[in-house]
Image 1: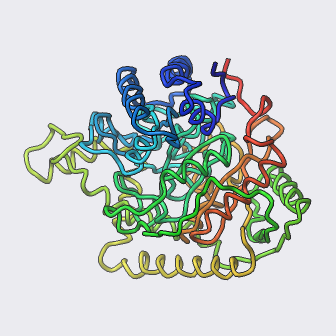
Image 2: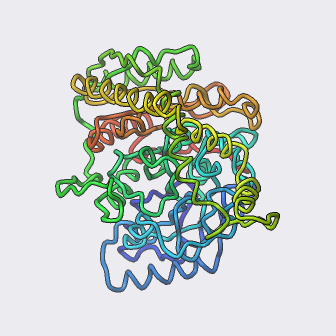
Image 3: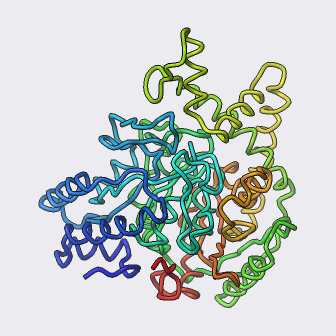
Length: 491
């Protein structure tokens, strides 16, 4: 019999494959948790019991013809910017309200082939633009550890459902920290793979050179298993890598003696003292296991925030131009000309934060300003990438805080966009450089709120990253990454 917080992705798949657990029972258990807690968290934008029932039948039929499915009967909830055939994909925006794609994203197809149950669509910052999940057109998601606080963003729903065990795992997207930051604030594992490791086909684009799909889980081993399923070349995504030598990511080794770098520029005034202390303790954990700690400098890391907000908004300006009220999504009735249709549909459909970023990106790309802003940002991005390349010539992994603070109150930073943007100060550079990063839980502050440790490795060294994360998890949280002390009280 299933119990809350006790079932890992691996164990569910194992028991469904060997017949000791029925797919129906797994689905029923998690359906009841969504029905009981989903509204309290405002985590779901779409959840339909009839579709869940059809998913159960699909997996049962699959089990009749295939053995040892890696995700047999595992419920996987999806951030609502991943296209799902027959289910709405709104991106948390009114402009895509009731839009139902005619196809599945590549990662959704891979999940289905692996035997997973597609278990609803999750709330998010509109078009993945935000760090708190307060920018959703459908209201903010609430943090399971404290319902008055944010879960982080933009994948806030994806982090919250795993933290509250409304699903054993979920998928999100990470453009500047949108998997890792909410994972830290909700006390779960969040993995952003190397750019190109996982197909972006069917992910509604925000910043095309930055976006990456990745999993939320409660353990490193489960994240590795999800990555094994998701990774690989896709002919429909020209940025995905055709790599015949991809390792089996779930064959983890937590006994490696690694060189771990700590960046001196990360000791900033914005860093919460309790998180700084937790970082020092984490490095001591690695030292105790024979790892060498090396102090590093990333001279251009301070330019990450302005570089990101030029590159990302410029790409968003181009990507979101397709939402014009003509082909799909919201169409305004307040127009007499085609230009008025465009203007009215976009004004009514997009929220404030999305409009701000579109305008910023359009300005950065405009004639006379392109070289000064977008061109300069691309050159600075390359400098940041080179800084990381030099650092990884000296170390295997870089450790840092994931977020400068723990979860803040809903509404606390709504009128302070700079403070909100600085929530991603430690995560943005990873996307600019195209390298993998993971956030793993590293304790709680005095208020009982989770803190996150971020680890980064060189591009395509996702295996090393996972090995390093497992080493810390096994030493501090036990094999499996979860215990009675590490779960929120939602009663």
